[in-house]
Length: 357
Image (tube, rainbow, N blue to C red; front, side, top):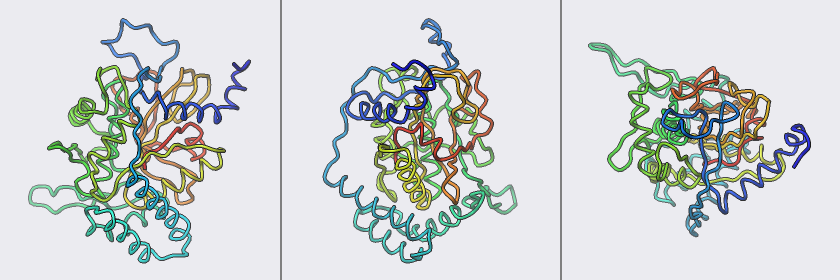
């Protein structure tokens, strides 16, 4: 449609959101297909190092109930209060805690007894420079004492163990991180996601069984090793695990001007990080020759990918995420340098289609 790549890049915000709207009403297949797997060798090779694409399936769009709409409205109100009043010093955290406790009681949420500790620690983390927070303790060595575990920016990272499992990897990271603040959110239907606090990026011995279970139980429908994860699948499984153990997730489609999208993203991410939740984010990076996110290939086809946002800087201008690309065994030609990557918030939002918060 456009004569040059520069024109395409310049108008990407409009087209991204148009794609997002189309996705909302129809095409919701959301994939991570960064490198061709061995079992798919018969398929045509991609022209660039990665080929991520929407899949031609049309799942039924979730219709919100009146209760879900009311819950989301209450959460938006609390999010605005936290971002505009608590963080600016216009309201005390103690006062906000009273409002949050009333919210939890109204919606019959669990883990209310953990609220004060969670809010205090999460607020301290948000206000720190490096996002450090003592959240866990190492299991004591034989005959020894438990050792405080310092987590910088994040405390879990699951590499995608199959070429199309960015969704399961993002879910695993999100739910384990959530469980640090809200106990039990890493367990559902008799299954508990594993986590080894001694290592940064989870080893295949833990990550593969977790991601396979997620893929086989609804995150990926049909062909587990070739399909990907849609927004509706991500939302359903998140809430299966979270299940009122402190809250519920909702989908937010980013729209409007880039500035308004950035403001919306910052507000919701800040309030979720401040109340103990990570934020799965769906990104759409158009094909071309340019650097988009740290470690991504310069020449690539369209990339549709899930990343869990785990932290945002105190000025809200830098967003941190645990990229499933790091340490992934199925990747080639990628050089994501660290499990906890970061980029300017506006840069991430430029590519973000929507978030689950």
